[in-house]
Length: 489
Image (tube, rainbow, N blue to C red; front, top):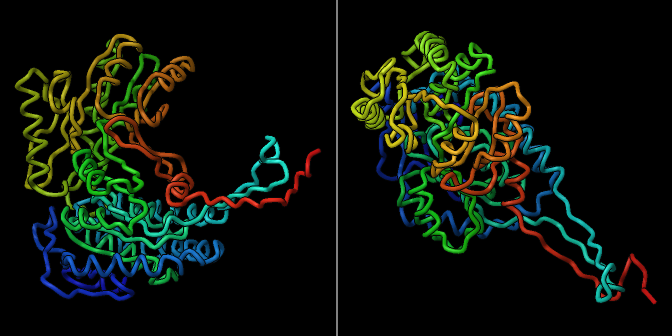
């Protein structure tokens, strides 16, 4: 199937249901935001197909659970190798479907390989514990043990902005835990998502372990409401996350719901390094990342110096065809998204911000935009921009800027440039975020390190080790009248 996805023009992204690929039904087009032509096609799932997929997953969950961890780990290790082998083909699909520069897509596939390798390693660590029951009188004479058992049927709802790696995290960890997984792909990246599933199947993942369905919110809602689903992992907007939670009811949830990440640049920072880092990570994937650099707070004594350096670095970014290996900034996911961000920039200027760079648009391509000192009440400060726009604002003291950052309804990740250890510890302690990156921007992630937020940024942590905990349940065994601890007096 991988080769068919790479060779088709436009690429046909079939569903994978009940152990077979199928493209039956009315096909929907995906128009590439840069090419402005149809680059892939998919068939939205019907209610009958959704019901069939849920039944198949439920009926076969036990078969997947009985695969030895070593077997699952071997498949994931092979998938890591295949991700490297097919990185160019999948990166090209991502560039066509999303306008993401191909060099960023290649980097994403390198992370996919790492993610699968980490999932394989964590699979081998799944175990249990012997409990100290004999430490209390009622436990004397007994033995109790636990192990982490698969949850059963998992549902992974993935976003468009990193379609390969975020799917690798969700599906890789779920399979590592021993579950049968339903995948609801984003309609903006159907072929890219199908390629990751096809890669895992080629690596040896059994048909019982995964099914892929295409479609929009209605498909996701129907899957969330299925009583057979034991755990749901969702990445997307807070509004959609709330809808997922309502549909899911009492089902276990892991929600990553975005942010408007802040990066703090203190007076003692290496300004050249900070400006270069923020420029490179503020416009990666046109800013369409939940931890993309959105707000940069610079100590007032060095504000003008930083702004000049930052403008120079951003101005050097190459904007253009995402298939060109030299392109730094491609297009946004669609023209509506670019129009929205351009509108927010204009509103911020009307409210007193200074337009330092950009603000222009060509279709879905928004040229990298810098706003200086926008109002705290402007949308570019309060909301998640999710676009090629960065706001630069001055601050006077650390306590004040931490308080300002904490006023956001989001709390995913922050960046801090400082050489003072006391500043680092204070920021780590007091910023209400899930993670802090020191001497780097907010937009940095290691795939084997816990990642997730607080407040409206969601709950749960996405890294294979933590996700396996979410995808498993603790099962307890009590042996009455049999004790490794002795019988007492």
